[in-house]
Image 1 (cartoon, helix red, strand yellow):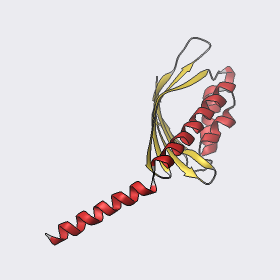
Image 2: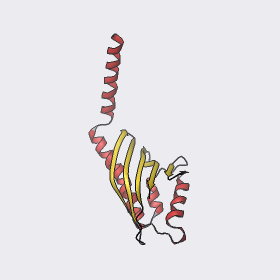
Image 3: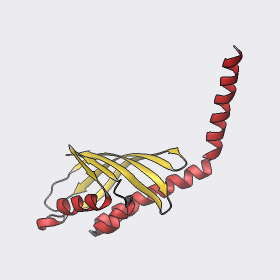
Image 4: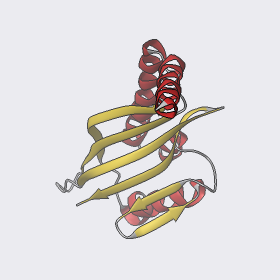
Length: 152
């Protein structure tokens, strides 16, 4: 019975430390910072500036992007995929919106984001879908380290 009491005290202390490390003020400013990264990406996309859009991603060969049945690894490879899909051969980027964003801090330096993307293309098509992101607080700021998007 004594072991159960010790485990309970240790568990309570761990929760108190976790809550203290991620105070509401910090949470609010971190969530706002993650939101700004996403807002900046939308603005860059809508200007047709893929390089600026990619600034929201971790510039690393370890970046992962999952879409459909394809896995893309690396910042440059992800940029190349976007260029091929949205700027090569007369393709258009369209007007991007992120909707129903939910940003949840998992740790003081890691956030999980859920949302919907919606593109309006000049030809009337409207690709849309869901995404989840893992976003990390790095020395250069908050960056998407993993993107899983699925859409129509």
